[in-house]
Every structure is written in structure tokens, then in C-alpha cells.
Amino acid sequence: MAAQHALPKQALTRCMGWLAGLEGGALTHAVIRRFVQRYRVDMGEAADPDITHYASFNQFFTRPLRAEARPLAPAAWRCPVDGAISQFGPISKDQIFQAKGHHYSTTALVGGDATLAQQFEDGAFATIYLSPRDYHRIHMPCDGVLREMIHVPGALYSVNPLTARSIPGLFARNERVVCVFDTPHGPMVLCLVGATIVGSMATAWHGLVNPPRTGQLRRWTYQDGAVALRQSDEMGRFLLGSTVVLLWPRKTLRFDAAWIAGAPVRLGTAMAHAAGH
Image (cartoon, rainbow, N blue to C red; front, side, top):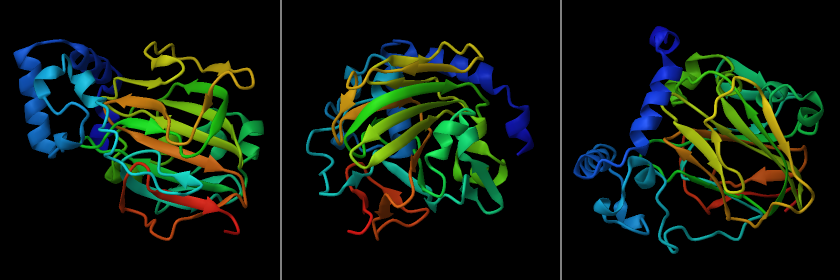
């Protein structure tokens, strides 16, 4: 992990973000073609499977899916992304399990707001890792009305499973965008965590949140009902891959029986059901 600490992550991320936005014609298409081959991306799922129709790597990376590519399960909470389950389960007071020997606090995750974090004491969490081959738009697990968005500056370590097992407090150290929703089931946090080479994160209501990277915590509050999203609506996207972390209050839900740490998951599948059901 010494390389993770020594790597000029901010400069590398800025550079890769710039390159990913270039419209390089045949060169861009060659890079996309190589990426598809290297990571075995299924372009048959894309709304437009023709690589030559993507002007930049970013356009390809955030490509939409065919409408029928992800059937929607009849569940109170649907999985918001394609990826792999990093960890999930109960929050122990304010501690979220990252990997064996590593925990981090809800307060640290949400940028130091102890009042916000307290709503999730002894609640539940889920962490989902998006690999390079995955679909990189994020959708709502349930209906929600946006209350607040917080951009928390931070490091840009890799978020792959090996790094998660090695770097303490990884998801509360990396740059992240914390979205706080009111839902029919109570408050919910959906946190987009940045990583090395993640050029930017965007939300459906704001557009690009980063850049700019000011080095200062930024927050936006929203009037009731100003941003209301339905279950499975797109809420954001990563320009290059990363991780999402979700928080819920105690006694809100029970995870679907099919959920197992390390297992792959797909957008729209059952994630959790109302507690008591």
C-alpha cells in the first residue's frame, strides 16, 4: 500500500479527467474499443452499442442502458447500481464496518455533521463497489425528496477490495458527495465516494459537483419538494468508477436474503424490504 500513499493521486485524477473528456475521433474510439475488450464490457446492454457514436471516453463510460436491460424487482429498496457488495449490515452505534480490523464513523462519512450522523445511530449500511466494467449511473433505491447535498474534500485512494482491506477509514477519507433524502421510510444517505482517476461526480439536479475541487467542504440545502425523485430514477453518475455507501436509521429495513458480502449485484434487483415484512 506504500504506492497508494506515494502516488500523486490528485494530479493523476485531474489529468485522467481531462483525457477522458477529449474528443479524439479515431483515437478515442480505439481507446474505448481496447477498454471494452480489456474489461469485457457488454455493449449489448447499452442503449447505443456502436462505439463510434461516443465522442469522448466520458460519454462511453456514462452510457445509458437499454430500457429493458435491468428488470425492476417489486421491493421497498432496489439496488441503486451495478457492482459488487463490499459490506452491509448493522451500524454499531456510529461505527460502519469497512473490512476486517477497520471501521469508520458515520460522522466522518458525512463530513463531520454529528447531528446528521446521529439519525443513523445503530441503523444499517450498505457499501457497493463499482468496477471499471460496470454501468456507472446511480439510481434511487426508493422514492426520495432531497434535503441536502454535501461535497466533502478528501484523498483519492483507490477503492478496490484490496485497498479497502488495507487503508483505515478509506470511505471517510476519500473525496465524496453526500446526498441526504427524506423517504417514505425515513431519512436516507446516499454517498458517492471518489477514488484515484475518478475525474468527477455528478448529480441529476446539480450536474458536475467536482470539479471544482476547492479544498473546502461545500453544502447545498433544498426546499421541500424542489428535488423529488421516484424509485429507480437516475440520481447521479461517476465519470470513472468508484463506490456508493448508503445509510438508514435503525429498524427501517431487512436486507434481501440473496445479499452476500462480495457477491455481484445488479441495478433494480431487490436490496432490502421493510422491517417486519
